[in-house]
Amino acid sequence: MQRNVGTADRWIRILLGIVFAVLAILGVGGTIGVIVFAILAIAMLWTGITQRCSLYVPFHINTRPRL
Image (cartoon, rainbow, N blue to C red):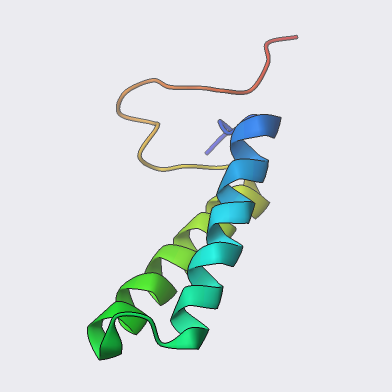
């Protein structure tokens, strides 16, 4: 799969991933909240680091600049 996450999109995802990870660590929302925030943190960090978003593919979205 080709990279489809641009620079601004990437940093927003990484920052959101960090925020979600902190919320999970702090235990916001009880057990279910921790699980949800942990899953969101992993997803946001993974897509930000790899610059690949599977949800963009079916909609043909690409936020990377064209060269």
